[in-house]
Image 1 (cartoon, one colour):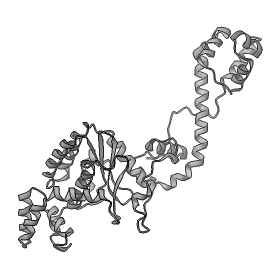
Image 2 (cartoon, helix red, strand yellow; image 1 turned 45 degrees about the vertical axis):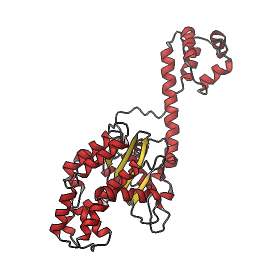
Image 3 (cartoon, one colour; image 1 turned 135 degrees about the horizontal axis):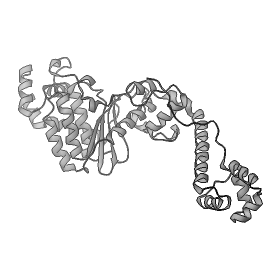
Image 4 (cartoon, helix red, strand yellow; image 1 turned 60 degrees about the vertical axis):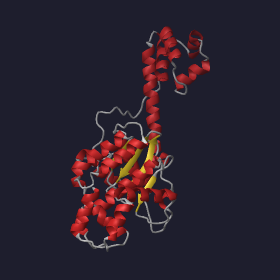
Length: 370
C-alpha cells in the first residue's frame, strides 16, 4: 500500500536560536557588545551565533543561562533543532539532484518483494532506498566490478539490480547467528547436507541453513531481480563469517544442489576473501577458482570412483539410476544431471527423475519474499 510518513515533524522553516537570543537582548536592554563582555566571548562569535553562522556550544549555553537566566538546555535544544533542520534541508537538495538515479533500480520488483516500502512522496521513496542500501548517497553504492561479468556483449547486467540483490542477501545474513567459521566443521556439515538432497525444500532448507550456520557460513535465499542473471554468490562478511547467497534461478534439483556445493567449494577453499564471486548465465572463461569449485561440487556429490563404476556398466534405465542414487545417498536427479553434463546421455533422457523447485515450496521464513 502506497503511503507517506505521518505524524512526522517536518517544518518548512526553523529559525536559528540566534534570533531568540537577539529578542532577549532587546527585551533586557543589552547589546551584543554587552553580552560579549559578560560572557567573555568575542563579539564576532556573538554576532555569528545571532546570524546562525556559529553554533551554540554547551559552554556557551551555560554562559547564556547565567547571563540571561534562560536554561542551558533550552539553548542546546533550539540549536539541535536548527542544525537538524539545516541538515535535512541540505539532504533534500541532494536528493533532488540524485532522484533520477532511482530509475536505474528495479524499484517495482523491490517493492513487490517487500524489500522496501512503497511511498507516493518522491523524497520519502528515495530515503527508503538509501536506508535499504545503508548509504547516504546512491553514488556510494558498492557495485561489483565489471570484470566479474567477463565483459561480453551478450551478457548485459543491470549493475543497480545486482547491487540490490546482493544488499538484500547481506541484510538477511545479518539476521543469522553463526559460529566462527571452521573449515573442518564446514566439511562435516557438507557431508550431512549431502544426505538431504532427496528431501523436499520444506524439510531440507531449515536444516541446510542450520548446518551452515553452525560451521560459520550464512546461507540465504534471495529471489533474483530482472537483468541480474545470477544464480549464486559467495563472499566473506568478516574473517570468520562467510556467506552463500542463492537465487533459485536453477530450478532443477540437480542444478540447485550443484550450485550450492559449488559456492560451498569457494568457501571451503577460502576464495572471495576480498571480493564477491558471482555465478551467472555467462559461460565464458573460467578462472582457476571456478574450476576448483566445480570439481569440489562434482566430487562431493558423486565421487569419481562411484561414477566411473556406474558408467562402466553401460546400462542406463530409470530403475538403475534410482538404485545407484540410493546406493550413494543422493537424489536421482543429481545422477541424471551428471550423466547429461558429461554427455553420456542426451538432455532429454530421464528428465522425469529430476525435480523442479519453486518459491512456493520454500519455507516462508527462508524465502525472503515477505
